[in-house]
Picture: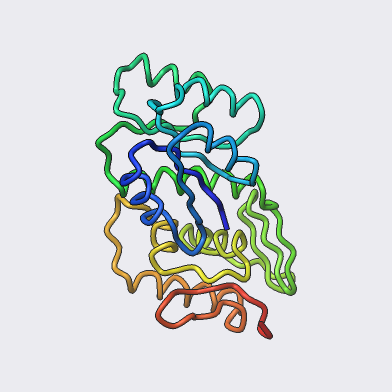
Length: 222
């Protein structure tokens, strides 16, 4: 589960973003001032969505403060679309910069991109699990010592399962992760991809179908 903080002085927008970004893998909190953000950030957050214009300070200055203390990912969210503002934000350490008005789908995709990068840095590139060995760096996958050929979509599906072992992932989350927002995908494509991964890895007892929700990689006795 990733925790993100939205620092936005428009409280209606902030609450709407909290609801929109909350999922089975993301929990979101929001606040409207830098003072409150400092208090909340004493807890562990993976990412901050930060408005530049706040009632008690400048978002660029707060960004520099955050980056001086930690490696937390920051996406700037602001109505300032001048090139100099964008450059200032990125050179101050922001991972991304989104201008208002913005598409919620684009924001969600940008957030997921940053969290995937974080997950890739935290999860071992080589997973030894029961009868399997998954080497994501070399894109080599083995079941009981025998090499298994996986397609790119199957590799992505396996990767997100390894990053979220024991967690139920919704169909929407899996579709967004594998195919993104720019490509129309028939929902049946996910079912086909899951079946193929199960069959190739002999993982029918491990890849669970959670009816009405999605799928999870869990031990057979869980």
